[in-house]
Image (tube, rainbow, N blue to C red; front, side):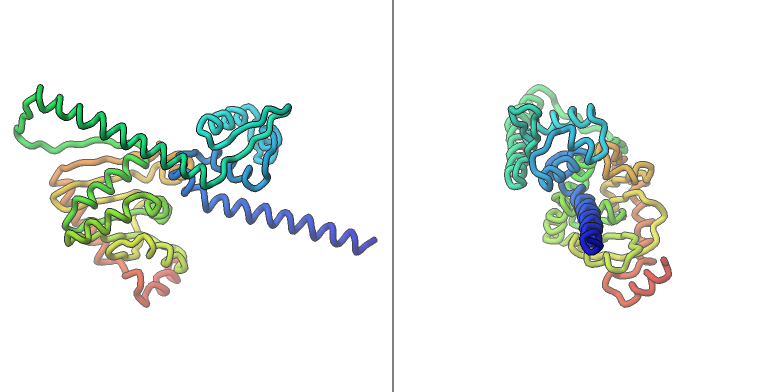
Length: 300
């Protein structure tokens, strides 16, 4: 009898470890699925947990994830409308997740339809504007605009890099690099390099083992240094500046719409920030240098 009790306790401990390990796995996938499938944090948790548990009721899922039942029902309805989940006709209803490959195909088809719509409508609109309105190329003045939403900001960054044949400085956090890796930005870096351009990435790393993670971003050059803030700066001299405050840095993973950036073509602001980036670059250490270990030890 005592051995039977010992085995049961071990099984319980093992199950808890498995649940904790799975939760860590979910956390590592959040950013990917939020961007790829256009889901928020709770929707990602629901989808991944359903893949793990199989069909269960929304009520049981609310209890397992410690979420208010009313909120769970609303979220399940949203996921059903997005074709990420389906429900049975039985009573009580069971929630069934879409296969990951089917969810990906759905996301791709949605994006492709959006692109086709923009191309089709955009060409006609541009022709109408050009036929009716004479462009007034007056005196050039600095412009400023605030961009909301991570996807929109990444699109602006990708466009800046793609059109660049010079040096673009990118200063940001590890979390931001992780999310950028799953955007088109790494592809645009290659396009810029073919034109003779380069992207210089500056990032702060607390853990030396994360340097391999940073390498896969494929920036032209990468250096490590102590950054003055958790914000984001992307700048090309005499061209454009995209700058984000650090106020919402800790909320980025929860809601991509809380990400705001200031974009400007103001020469004075651009060149001042470019000089600042050059100074940080000179103070940084190359990612592959032997001094990286010393840098990490100093941080600790």
